[in-house]
Image (cartoon, rainbow, N blue to C red):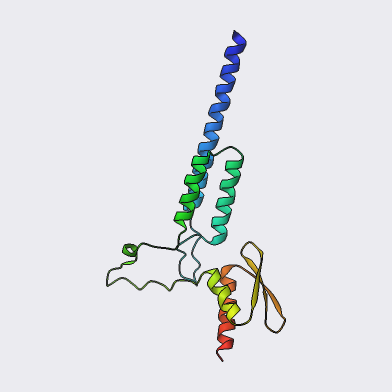
Length: 164
């Protein structure tokens, strides 16, 4: 009889430990998803997480689910929250500003728009990693670019040289 009672207590302890781990992992994920990258001084402040940040959060979420830390329902809820919080669409009412408010900074082009601009000028792009691309130039040169800021600068240079 004592053995059964001891076994029940051990099972209960492991159950409680599992619940605490699940709760802590979910809280960590929520905190990390709510943090936006710090704004760079020369650029307008970021209004959303970068593509690589979203990808890393979703990968971590998948690992937590695969490890049994999250249930399917918790996984789906957190996935939707991450995707919704990084959406570039803002409701029209949120974009309205008072007349005396400073103008909003120009929206940054997204990566597919930048790649399309390069394609219009005869450049080919190939992803070579997370947030990195190999660009083949029309005359045979190749350039490796890492990060959206560098890609943006490269495209601006191509467009300005083509405009001369």
